[in-house]
Length: 311
Image (cartoon, rainbow, N blue to C red; front, side, top):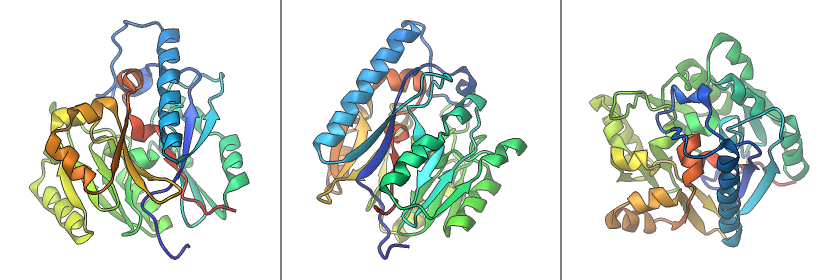
């Protein structure tokens, strides 16, 4: 284990999509997905690639090391653009792979991607949790879990994609403490992934507290944030639906930090919220309307952070 545990990294894995599109298998539990049938599948795919390339260029322009991998044409993987759900890379030289709720998404786990990462980074341990798919237990990486690395905490809103027992198992394996809670949207539907209602930075947290209906759980979260020195930046349900919770703080080789968000998320923020965030970090936004509409995920979902030590 490295002496200092970092909350941000300058190394980001992203998967350039080959067949991005609306995924019927995930739509039942993802209220953020929609299919308006206005575009053909090939038009959706082309627009998604253009949005992806623009986002990668913006990240590289500020000095973030983006490791891009091409999605394979076959088998079809409409959500391959969201690698953070199937793999995480940790500072103690560990790689963890995860059980996925939708069978088609299990095809996204690729050994060749992991081998490519191992060429540059040191790996001492691989933990594979995908066997839990056989008993219908799921934990979808940093979609399910918001990890406070320095404080060894894992925040997770429980859902069909985030099983409480598996959350505890991950925490035991990695030396973390689980902070489970419940969150629902305006229609009382479970929030499918924690990272759509919450983003954790080095010194702040962006969160939609409206989704946490238990006063006990809300107080518990506020106490955890206070104890770990995080300024709470609250967003509304409407802002959450505009992906203002789906942000990720990254760093560059100079140690500068950036909170990456979509154009839609940025436009939903108030001047006061922008000022609050700007006290802590730079803001970097990139428009990805096609990816958000048809994929039901935003910029945070598109990035798998690589905390592994360099060789």
